[in-house]
Length: 222
Picture: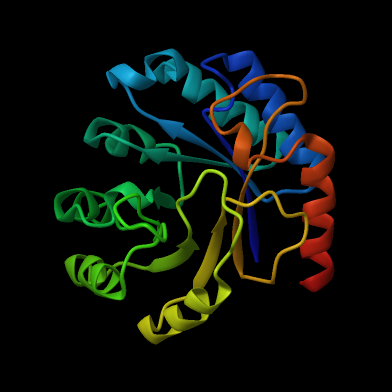
């Protein structure tokens, strides 16, 4: 299985904080640490890291023996990250974006595809939307990540995750709850943050101690 510690943009655009978060993910026992990559998105400008900073994070992860991952939010970011990642992650935002999906699939690497939605009240993409997304990239090696796009999320809606088995793909979890204990999935993505620092995804993130306990609980199920 694979446990992804989701740093996201909780580094507040500070590469030193990002490296400290890598250290936390390593100590907690995560398999990978994941960031978010974008440039020239005005509302997110303050959380932006440069290409050189992402390269330094990749090298830092390598030195710490933890997998570097990052979610692209622009086409430029897809091409840049392809040099650094062995697995591409696609956020729920792009589930219905055929061009974006195809651009990632053209890189011919495994894909983790989140299935949340901000367009629907329940925070989840419909089965029809998931089916259509997969039809855009029929030859891709896709792992679907059950996701409820609510901040915070109080209900994992596990039944929906079970229903997703109909797509005949590995089903993992992109978890937006702050639960320390969740059902077993072969891939689990969990948000975390540094203690005492205000950050964008604070409402869905575990502190370092909680992340360690969370991963310990998952490993017991493994």
